[in-house]
Image (tube, rainbow, N blue to C red; front, top):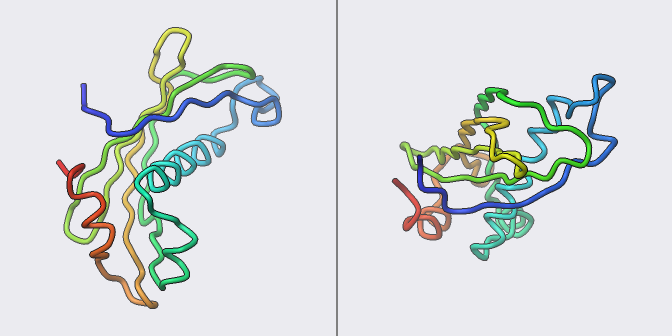
Length: 134
């Protein structure tokens, strides 16, 4: 098992489910993004402040594998770890249902930074996340 560097516990809300009674696939992207933003915040990085400074981290590629569905009221934990590949920050994110710790979703999210309108690395993020890179 990978060593996660951050985790966030959440609960499925009724309106996130489709007619089949399971979480609609698009909502998993929301859970993953919310986890990344909370991770940034936990490290003292404001997504809004980055934007004000001309640094915009954006998703370049996202791969999700759905394993077990979540249903209304299910509690779950979203975990992540991060690697640096060139100018990309690659987040490995997994979601587990808390009742039985079954894997719900496995995702790989590749992000890049657009700095003042140009694709570029971010020395600030490199510094903040250096201890987490594997």
